[in-house]
Amino acid sequence: MRIAGLTWLFVLATGITVNVDFMGRSEIVARLRDQAPARVEVELINHHDLIFSTDALSIGDPAQILHSIFDTGSFQPVIFSARCLGFAACYEDSVPRDAYDPSNSTTYVGTKSGDVHNADLVELTYGQGTVDAIYGRDKFAVATQLEARLSFLEVVAKQSSFESLDLEGLTAVIGIGKTPVMSKMVEQLGLNKHRSLLDAMEIQRFTVCIGRQPLSSGKLVLNDDSIDSGQATAAFPVDVVGHVHWGLQIQGISLGEESVACAEGACTAIADTGTSLLAVPTQVIQAVMEVIGDVNDDCSNINRLPSLTFKVAGPAGSHDLVIPPDGYMALLDGYAAPDVWDVIKIWFGENPGKISHCVPLLMPQDESSPEFGQVMILGLPLFRQYMATFKHSPPHEIHFEKSPAEGDCTRRNVGTSLAEEQAGGGSFITIDPKRLRVPHQKIQSAVSLL
Image (tube, rainbow, N blue to C red; front, side):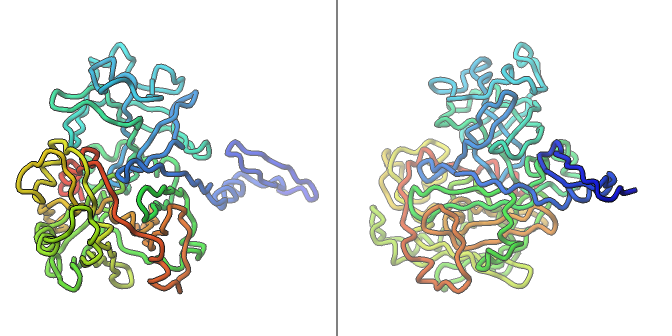
């Protein structure tokens, strides 16, 4: 029953202020449900054009900053903690700056420091080797605006095959992969037991934006409403396929005007912000090798090369994701770690020691999934060319739009000409090969779990 003329002002625990005329509980819940989720925009820090991180994420109480990579190719938070040094020599020199210490958090639930060596360990395999981790639970916050308690994997040891961690101060990889669709395989692997950050914080949309210019910064926008509000008029939607990953149905790959792969059979690609390369079928590698024969070592003449185009299925027809030569070619300058050399050696006759050559940011990947065909991984070379808005609520979609020259995430108008959108943007990057993030484990995961 309402009492006319009386209005109460409730400031709820959520921080939302609601005017209430003695409204019932069901009305309050409905009003809260209608409130738009908080839009959170965080800066992405460019590390050598190979990794993009943010300092906007914290864990525990009191809050401890996590220097994090937000990774669309994985699902759970993985944290390299201060306890890794105490249990095994994880780090090359010293514990990274601000490494998470569970013993300093009043909200941590998990293994005490004295019991770490008796805990059940989970193996995590990366390009450099394998590390051991344990599960824990704590409070996470993004820019103090979004909060949730999450399970996470805390790296506590490296196996003997693993090189010392060269994290450059990075202390976490935060998986923001698509929520696993319930299946027997997902249940067997335990992926249904732990909520992702997207689920726990009820994030329905997020946008990843990186500038096309070398060393550009970027942005991650959580709860981005640009698509729904009509601001992203130049964005086009593509379908997401698969049970677990942000999978794209590839209907063809061409180099210039020549079709080189996937025209006659099923192919699927994972959109992965945590990978430095494009993992593509050998036919693509061979086609590129045929056209780059006389490319200068300093990349000064790569503009003569054709673009690499991926034709992707969308709800209203296919769309082209075009990567120009300055997007898939790079100047490698430095020494390659063994796992990186295994990938890039196809471009060289023998290991030259110090590398200073212009090479494609491509690695061969010919593994297939029975259900989804040949599986690829499209990493940062794709995201330098296109900002991507991921729709996390079903039906899952990704909306792509040409990236700006710099990482300011400014949306362009639908009438912008190709010449205008390319003006001032696009130039090859120079990278140290030892810093490449090679997606060996992600390929195995993609093939088995897609």
